Length: 525
Image 1 (cartoon, rainbow, N blue to C red):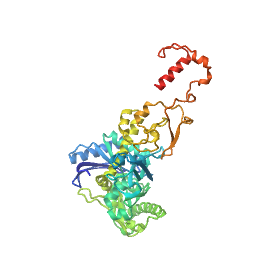
Image 2 (cartoon, rainbow, N blue to C red; image 1 turned 90 degrees about the vertical axis):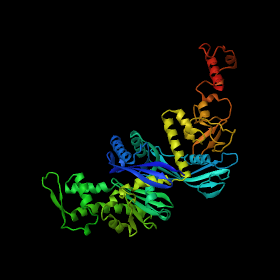
Image 3 (cartoon, rainbow, N blue to C red; image 1 turned 90 degrees about the horizontal axis):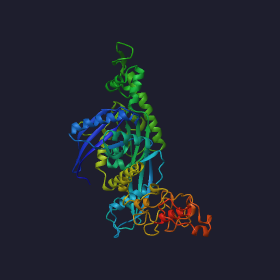
Image 4 (tube, helix red, strand yellow; image 1 turned 120 degrees about the horizontal axis):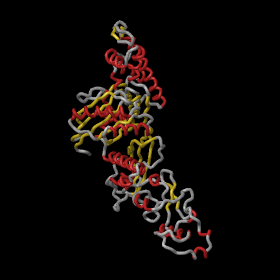
């Protein structure tokens, strides 16, 4: 467990970008700085203009740095739950140490093994969350380090999201001059701060009412089990007011905040307020009930959509009920309107920290608390994920030096070195752990690649790893000429072959057969 550090969260929202600087000390999280900048370059929670988003991030970071009096270089970034996929994964290795004591390296290796699975090219892994370790058949283990065993297994949950969304977030943060220490799914962050332990265990629905979208997430057994996103949020209420009242978006936002109410039956048709409309010099009088009817119509549509989706997965009767949060939930009357659709067990969560008592900061505060409460096993899991992501990025950029830094000591997937034959370290073992698994990257790079994997060497021993990729272990035998572009031996008579002139292989003298001999001699050397 960490003792003291600075944690900075970055919440890239459709309406605003929030930065929270917290000091973690002696198990306590203290907020020491906040930045809030109007968001530009986002639509419906998705980045659509990288340059505008980078500028907004930099302004929010500058505000937080001035208030906290610290230099921000690394941030924890929230990822929206748009098209989030949650899959079960499983990994199994042999314990590496001679005395069979499980170490952090074994945990690291089994997490790497669990991640070896097929992911569609349009999706990217966001995080891997360990659920249960099994040591020699004994299950229900949360932290296996220090135990004795031969076989270590892991059951975990693998979360993937659209590659476009994750890439755009990463690019914006990096162009703003920052590095990402952690990706956190936003509903998970909210659950950490908005729900107590019992609510997370027995099941609760979190409804995050943002500016560009509204998400409904199910938290059960202390984990995110399901998430649904409706592409409507508080900004749509503002747009409705702007269009119907023929006023600007800024004026519509101000009217919504000052005079808006979510339930029209509880407003008065005799209370008026002025509205500056386009094309008229004098303001127009509008009554509060008419404004409330505009607001209520959009919120009813949002709540009905969410209710239909939750009803389809049988999640309307969870013991924890419903928790509303997000900027749009601060509109007066939203709680009463939500109870009409979700029952009486609905409440609004507002952060309790001084200066942040607004539901718009729930995600930002939740990310700080989520990272501060990660146990060591989850920290190993996330560091493993970051290392492998850096490894793959370095490989794509053609940087073998950086790539090899992350290769050392980890079990490798067949995809990392495809089109290469491997030899077992122990002369033929079938394990995928550190003792009998794939050969290291340096040895692999030193071996020549086979011209084809569609026709394996006839003396090769086939294997299949847990990602359903088939490869081959080869033995130290001469390569079959059939797998070269050069002619085979039977194309020449024995007399022609032996009577060929022998010359220096480094020169251009000699015939074709001599060049062929030089090629094979270099290959075997």
